[in-house]
Image 1 (tube, rainbow, N blue to C red):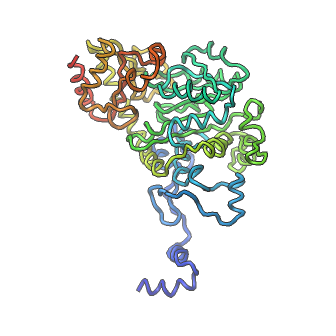
Image 2 (spheres, helix red, strand yellow; image 1 turned 90 degrees about the vertical axis):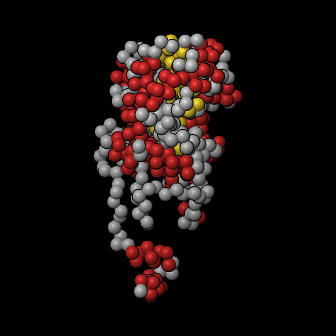
Length: 480
């Protein structure tokens, strides 16, 4: 009966049967189940983790964000295509530079960080490469704190050097040295909010003050903290970077990176210092990203944020760095990362509680030389933990095993539940020996500087029962 009714109705409704069916069953009402208006990450983080960035599919009402496994997207006509290629209209063109599934993740992470716009790329390394390509030409430099993930250290000191980009490393609390290292070719200050591997918390506000005095942006890698613990924009950062592979995704099943822009940096205040963003771009027939997409431009006016926030950095990163270097992320990966973010607030509470309990256990163990975890009241970073991340000091920390290099390797080789994996931020507890793994390509002095001496063991504490976590570590230490 239904099929006969439709058969009679469709010819009258449209020559396109699918469009006719949609209209036949639709009463033109929009699906609800949207993120409430006026919510903030400070007060409504869990709600935003679930609902921000995604609206129900307007045709089918799909609750879960669809995965758009497309390479290219259809244009309405030649003018639609021309407008999108000229950056005169928003919309997907080709998945290398944008995809609706990726767009949903970008909006979600931007909302949770309190930023204006975001860009998803293939990995955390891809995020750093793409972000710095917005700022640096050959002969330029940036200042970085020296408590870094080993891969970032080698990327900065080897690959960036190949491009003629210089990194100047300073201790994370050497504020005088950081300020003194800035010159006319310095384009940014970079740090990790909670440093990998040592779990050291950085004084982001102090670095922001130095950056603002110099008229340069502060870029913060917020991977280890996640926006649940620290939101660097609230402390003066201008750009936030994530390896979404870690806590955002949280399940060790998808690589990804995210660049988030706060949007209020004035690139035009010294346009010659930031020529890629703030001077005419030949690749787009003289378009000036800062003038069009910055906080005082027409796009900000369209979004109702003129004079406050824009998206020049994010758009330039997409239209130039991502377009040309191609560090694009698969829609399948952005889907998995979105699913992980939905439980971020729940996971981080358990991660932090378990990490604190394990650190306290190790701090009293006779076979442990030292424990570096800002969640311990005895740790030098405890006050910064209370200031920046009172909800928890994270799940990443390091400890030193009495007996040095070989003893540390013995512990790593003796755990039974911990996973020996070169990753962090997984739901499962992970363990590593940085000196023979992630930092093995560095010299002894560089390892010590980065917080990975020979006796160091790094743990990323998962969400298993804490009794099982401690029992497994105790078993490994009994082998010494």
